Every structure is written in C-alpha cells, then in structure tokens.
Length: 113
Image 1 (cartoon, rainbow, N blue to C red):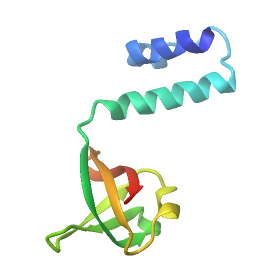
Image 2: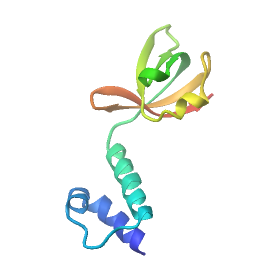
Image 3: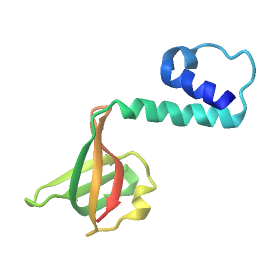
C-alpha cells in the first residue's frame, strides 16, 4: 500500500514529492520505485519517433550508435541504456525509438528485426 501511495505521489506531484523532506526513512525498495517512476514519468512526456535501419557502427566508449537508413543516409544517436550494446552488432536490422533528451537524439528503445 505504501508503494502505491508513493507511486501516486511521484506521478501526481513530482516536484513536491521529491523536494520535501521525508518524515521517516524510506526503505531501499521505495527509493528504487521512486527512481524508476520518476525516470518513466520524465521520458513519457517526450515525443518518440520510431525509425528502421541497419546498425552501421557501435561506439560503446562514447555511448553512441550510428544507424544507416534505406536511402543510404546514416545518423549517429546517443544511447540511453548501455545494455543495448549487448543486443546488437554491425549489420543488424533494427527498429529504434528516438527521443530528444538534453538536445541530443537518443535511442530509448531498440528491437531487432
């Protein structure tokens, strides 16, 4: 019940819930719930674009990936989650979900075709 109340507070009052001092110490599970809900609440409001292409290059050191599109154009994107690098290799056909985060086009989701 406490997690549900906390989740509703985070979604409905994000600034207030996170900036007010806690009256009791929150359990680590509750803190993780807040972090996950806060992240999903902030990314849910951004417009998402879905693109299809082929992985042209992967630069794990700079958290970027270059995707080649059907008209032989390529574009480099930031990668939000480093685990994506484990899922793809050069030449894989992919569908990526792109959001503009902090002024950079960022891959927020990826699936192999």
